[in-house]
Image (cartoon, rainbow, N blue to C red; front, top):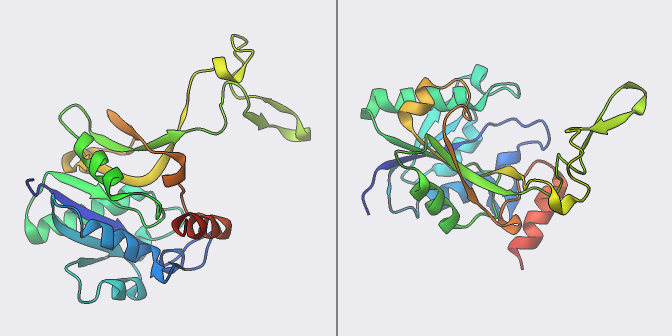
Amino acid sequence: MSKDFYAFIFARGGSKGITKKNLRKINGISLVRRSIDLALQLDNVLKIFLSTDSQEIANEVNSLDVEVIKRPYELAKDETSEILAWKHAINVVEEKFGSFDKFVSIPPTSPLRSLEDVKNIMFLLNAKFDLTLGITKSKRNPWFNMVKKSEGNQVTKIFNDKSFSRRQDAPLTFDLTTVAYAAHTSYVINSKNLLDGVIGGLEIPEERSLDIDTEIDLKMAEFFLNQ
């Protein structure tokens, strides 16, 4: 298999929901280290990079074949768009190593994914798609059992389409996962929004699509990893 991807792990030191989330450990291994360990197993990855504003996170790759990219403070805030960190990392890498064609991001917040999940998302990237990612069936359907709330606690349907009287008849919808994102480098550099292009989605089973955002998510991840 040709080595045609550069792999990136984006890990901020701060987090709104969980303090030092990317350094939190499950079974003794931090979330960021789990992403790095998976990236090291990918046969078609030429180089691996860790983009972070935290020296503590950077220390996680000591002695590993991983290059650290120092992320500027302004690109590590809660409100910073993820694509800006991606663009910064690509520019740093291209200045040092030259241009490259394919990019894969392996977020630390998806510890239940499998190696095959990431490989398949990468394999799905071709001339047809600008970016590929993982999707999983939605637990709630916006056509049937999701609502929005206005002042006075009034709730209304998100889509007021009377065509569907049963949830089973409503269009099937999917949630985005953070399992992995593969993209053509030129698309990332030239886009303002990651989902503006032609996007390919690989369906991931619910049991491997958990996104760590709360303490409860961490406990759930530990439970499933121990099964």
